[in-house]
Image (tube, rainbow, N blue to C red):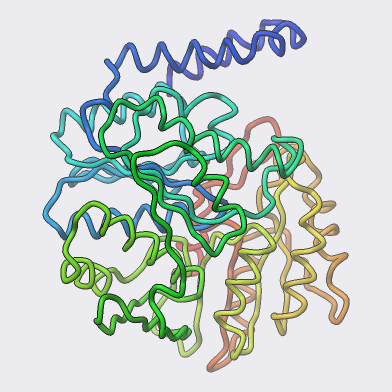
Length: 415
């Protein structure tokens, strides 16, 4: 990331109007330079890219687990971590898809480690800076779409277009048997399937019927097998089917897929249960959009829920704050609002915006996130669920002028 920081410093010296004019050429040139310096590493390894609004990190983790179970060596880059072969480090950059030089170096390191596959989480915001350029994909997986990052893209249509660009970039890949895999239950699936590829495949929840969604896991049917996964929620069923479909298209045997899925128990920061011997449930989840928050809460709709949540600042999708408050009001018996990632905004104003959506109760406001989680745990009784959302594995609370305050929902809850 050093090169990216140097370039960012130089960029600040350029007048904004001039930079805006030459921005596409600037980003394209840096993407090409990064690939050139690291000798176009994606041409030397099988690359699987995953995009969508929700489920990207989870799907990459599931794909990785299945491929590893099949005996292959993998590299993995997502919001949660970076992994090359046996070495794994947490993603501390607050970026799902890091800068161009980082990604190309990561790909080169995967090649040098003799990995067979690299699985990349790819984002719409990354396409704005051409981070998807000069990455030759073998397989592209689309999970789902719902409104997000509208502040960055300007509209939902432009957000969709940014996602589709990743799939359509495959036409420039010199790989053989390029494959696009899309969630056919999503209304935007055809937009991705219209991109050119050697092979196209779809997946649906219907593929694994009959299935049963429980708070303790998921039971479903695959290739005549009754399969149990420790993951929870309908959204994770879709992530599993995406991973399974990808694996089948790679030629991995059904019995290996089943074995991998049943071994795979949790994903950090994604419906992550914290067990310290208490007689109530504590769960940390990244849910930070209205759709993902509601689907997460639905997993626990049969329990008495104490919910800790906040909102993101920096002009990021302000429209969703009130809506997330409304959703919390529908599913949570008690609500504690707290600081999340205010950036340069007034954190009290952000929390106030979320509170506008809460009509049936008066939320408790505790701006210190650690104190808010502690209070939620103090209130919990036998059989309750304490649901802590918005951060997942994020290691910091992002404040004004780029300040970062170390904070881990997992560690706080565990302590």
